[in-house]
Amino acid sequence: MSTAIVVGAGIGGVTAAVALQRRGWQVTVLERAAELGEVGAGISVWPSAVAVLEELGVKGVEKVSVPSKPAGMRKPDGRWVVSAAELGVEIPVMIHRAQLHDLITAGFGPAVTVRTGYDVRTVAQDADGVTVNDELRADLLVAADGIRSMVRRTLYPQYAGPRYAGFTAYRGIADVELDDGGGETWGRGQLFGFARLIDGRYYWYGTANQPAGTTSEPTVFESWHDPIPRLIAGSEKVLQNDIYDLTLPLVPFVQGRVVLLGDAAHAMTPNLGRGACSAIEDAGALDRHLRDGDLHTALTAYDAERRPATTKLVKRSRSLGRLAQTENPLVCTLREGLFTLGGKLMSLRARK
Ligand SMILES: Cc1cc2nc3c(=O)[nH]c(=O)nc-3n(C[C@H](O)[C@H](O)[C@H](O)COP(=O)(O)OP(=O)(O)OC[C@H]3O[C@@H](n4cnc5c(N)ncnc54)[C@H](O)[C@@H]3O)c2cc1C
Image (cartoon, rainbow, N blue to C red; front, top):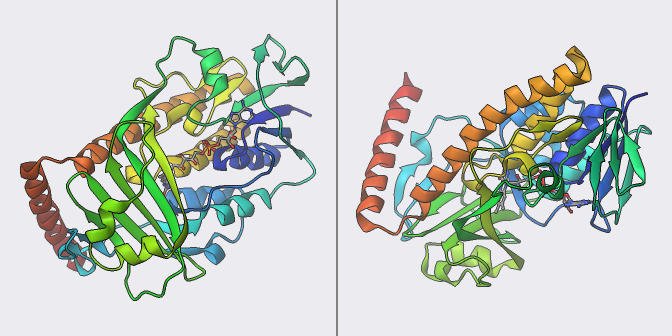
């Protein structure tokens, strides 16, 4: 039986383990953290990623998700730039990260072994296999060890890696009663978004421009429209993460028997809400290509499919992030005008 080691048990790593198991591989997942799990925040999952999960046999996405209502975009004072009624676009579903992670790992069978508290420090490969920490050996290694991937650094020591996007993100889950479909509010250099989760609580996120490594609170949103201050006040915990993506061009996702997947390969800013979805889609692609060919052909096809597709997303996400975080008043006014016009055009198209 073919053997694989997956480094990292984030959403990418666990989905890759499910995919490999499906193809009949014996899989060992190595995770540095003491326990499996995900942070306390929501995540938007797009239809293409939901389709991959279903294809991989991950059941029950609909039981833990709420379709995000296309509620549109507001200004900090609450006036609509584009309202819900005008939008007729494809929308993601909203899921609590921990629930999504649990749903995927529920698909692990006897072919998957998970070792938590295991730090991968070295990776070496030869013609026959890959060795981790001089003690574990497998035919294939999937590096799903996140944006600061140790495996990627080993393969490509010259690569510049993560670059700071110029802003930080706050996230929380609020236990509040609301009658509001959610959506995003864009200010000058900040944005705030929220959506309901299946259990009735609300997931929210906010961004602010600041130097990397600055610890701060989302105080800037205190003067924004209702229910934004209530959402922040109603959250037990606020997470803060500086936003990075990976320098372009991305490095090849495959070197010999080692495959990069998820943020390790193509970390992007969260503006499109596509990072974890892309990790899921990587796992779907790996599954498909492993079904169709020998290992070398399958990995070559995986890189040929996923690198160009995710390069586009890294670029688009970063551009959208720049537009969202601009502090230039003229650009903000132009941006609002464009969104209003775009909303009207979409509305016309939807009515046709
Ligand atoms: C604010 C914010 C909002 C976001 N919103 C969305 C969204 O709505 N939709 C969406 O699709 N994406 C979103 N994303 C992106 C998404 O969170 C990531 O793309 C996704 O979580 C990446 O998953 P991953 O499994 O590739 O990496 P990670 O989740 O980073 O997992 C890597 C794992 O590897 C482990 N690890 C690292 N090094 C080692 C080692 N040496 N040995 C063993 N284990 C190791 C880590 O402990 C970790 O568990 C958002 C990101 C942010 C920051």
